[in-house]
Image 1 (cartoon, rainbow, N blue to C red):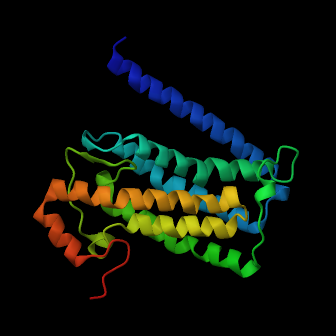
Image 2: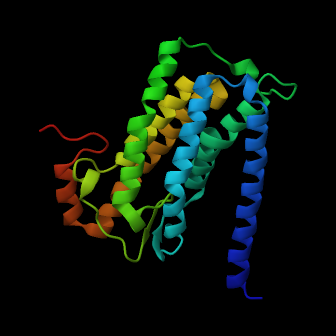
Length: 232
């Protein structure tokens, strides 16, 4: 069997293993549902909604032929950190909460109900921005720092007003998570990790786009804000 055939097979096996692990954890979460509060169920809705929105675009992205990639070690660590802090760790926290296997309970904190309601309200604009960002980008979207052979400069839709609406959406999501899951590790830690990713990535992404599209990108940056629309 050729090396090119082994690699896709290995990726499929890893994907299947990840799915099996996630299904097992989700089963444990719902088995432990009596210990889960309303605002934590809201976070579960955020998690599932985000996954459903992103899944088809991730599948579509696999067809792209990557020509430029900055997927270095630090980038891989940041992506792993986001996967853990925004998915696996909160799910484990909810699956083991108030059980003998509770390993994160020591890091709980208390917030007033209105803070949790604010977190819940942030989910609606998050869903819109997250979906619209993916939809407007289409095959141009990638979870990694990379450019593919048919990359285009998207300046329509929501990208007419901001260059990185997906980061704005994720800021809403990570802040909402800290307001919905009252735990320093399972809830708040994602803000720290996402801040590191945002500060590390934003300059690199714009440098890659400028190298790819030249003066067209410079004109675009003068017309738009990074994550908030320009007022003047």
